Length: 248
Length: 269
Image: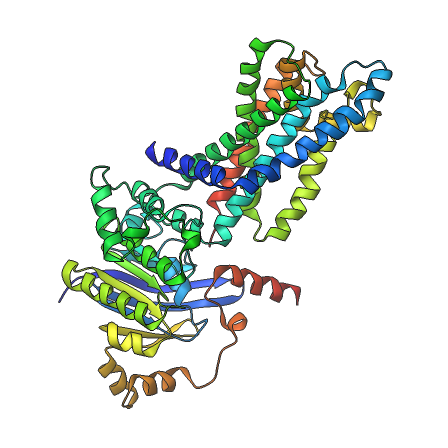
């Protein structure tokens, strides 16, 4: 238990000591909130769909934790490239515990990033539908963040260089965000887009948050929870499997 | 005769169709200082990586303090400390935090941690820098901290993989003084790799010369000279390993990552 705590603490320390990392992963969501929230918001309203910001914020929070989770995966890659991983891998601690402690740290960082974006969106005019549901919303976010951190760590275990990781970011993360329900309501998009989004677990993460924060849903909370739970289990298994195979 | 603490039997490591380590056997006695001497890409680091459970041998068996490294990984890991060839500190943590994390990972009893860390940091003369981030440390300071860290859980065996690479003469001498002291006072077994002849000759009690994945000779300096009919270790070494330089990527490399690159290149061809 102490080992897991120590590995968690290591991630947290690294996070608050690195100002550029905090800013780097926050810049994009703020930009999206401003450009889309205000830019598209006016047209959205004219189309009779209501307040776009209310719709958008859960999507942007999810995007923040998605980016943060994958970004955290890069840290695993940095450990691999800059040697600290060798130190971890020759200790008597099992790799599963190493992964678990580190991923919990990664998830905590994501939660904090999500929380910051939530506060910024409050400043920009977002209002949760019911304040009592904000806590459960962040509870769901914990599971989401852990799933994404594991996913990032699993991917990072498989690639050897930053270029490779960049490619995965472009080919996997960006589509996962843009082809989800984060930016547009799924009931008014062309069928092919709806089908893709329905197969994308990120859509369900957004949908659960949107239900709890803005009282809007496409799939229903039960289905959202189910998909999130399955995603969490699958990405943990994936991360453990990949992490165990690392040979230095 | 003292008992063996490290044994390797017919160990082979292949990466694809490149054979990095080709059937080596050796044993190191308890309390001995043992050197693995060889040119770049001879298989020194690959052997250390297998001994320290980072790589699985393709064939053969290795044991540390009586524990098989593939079957009793965790017990074997508790038995050794290692100073890696490449830096392996967390740059964004302080010296003390790096030490503390290591102590936790090796389950050093909580009440002993502060004294042990202080004693070791004083030994390597870094106590006054304990709260500085590693990224502000010079190469020599990092190496010293890595040695201190490797000793924190009081291992029976200390592995040093090219420990003096990039160090100045003062730091090198200082480091070898510590190592000798550890061996004398604590009876710790030291296993190091190097391609500096003088280090092997001065520090090690026994030397194994490795080339192209095979041990070509082993023994004390005197024995090696006798075997080859030469006067100095340098002559013996050159006679055994030849005068030509090596192409690292072809003959195997000291870095697993580069190995993968080499493998990738051969596949592309």
